[in-house]
Length: 237
Length: 278
Image 1 (cartoon, helix red, strand yellow):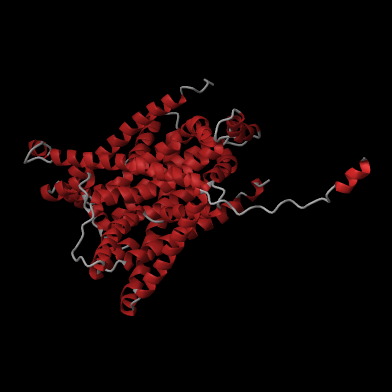
Image 2 (image 1 turned 180 degrees about the vertical axis):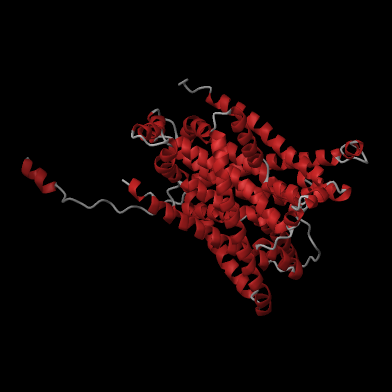
């Protein structure tokens, strides 16, 4: 028992400080991806209901590609692809040398690509759930298109899209575990190193498992609060 | 007076021709993005063509195909085992006994709340800590093998997801269907198999398809525990050649299987729900 406590202490002999750092990386990776993914996803959803067929098809190609590839492969494609691409580009203008892409940055890009293509579907179905009368009512009041969007459609859209987006957040949180494969020091990477060094694999991978579970629990508590907040204007049924 | 008016009346005219389409920001963005995708497509084909190397194709082509076969086998076996496991879990989840339903809920929540990769590592690396105990009960032979561990982890994971799909689908069948069945004198089991389940499965069809696709994509992580599926073979080929086209080919293969599966499933669903079309 004592040796386990040593392994789990903070400081040189224990691994808790390393694992805490991993938790921080995992959470910040998910939080950094969220706004990027939401923004791209919203833009894609807008494009998908545009009157320009070129824009609609371009958006469809985007979602088909990034929903059709495994997340791990997307991550590798972004990480190695950017690295090799930039190297080739530098070679072309006469600079030689190897380039290391920041793994956090590659993680954010890959996860945002995946997240946004799913988010666009959520936004799109939320858009479709808003009756045309809401737009017409806005125009009848003399509001411009932008204002109708901002003051009438968006508040309803967010409320409708919230459960779907909450689901995507949970998926995002789980997908962050994949970045350990490109060497980012997230929860899984740190516990993996601890497991290899200490030879206590079950202990440390069990801790990783529980940490992800706690993150999911905490997220669902926060999400429930946000949903309650979003629903406060609705009539009680 | 009226004659003068008649003289000046112009004959009916066709509507004026529409002016040139305005260059809105939307239109410019659409055309730019389309050009980008077309350019990317051409670049992809040109890249794969330029990098085509008979040696590499001969050496790694069969490996890719065997990797693909491993992926398909892994996914189909684990989804099938998961489907069987999900039945008791779904029933336990709907059970009136609070202990059973809570246990099932905990199982589902644990497996849905954590990454598949963490579950896989816990089983593959973690169970190694219990080697003496596992050897004593003769299970070590099973858990020693990465393939078995992957199958085990995937089956448990997909069982949790499928149980939720099944439960949601059974819940979606209205109470009146049960009552109607009882009124006709069917037993509970008959009512379930003949009346409720067929209706529930139609609701569950789409989520099941999504779950299979998710498993197919999720299965790529077995490459990290030394199973040589499509991703594993890709990583091995990349580490030997440092040739980026390996990843591109993997992407092409995954894309083709996912898209095929998605379209086949859509056809399948359209066929099975044709009586619901109006």
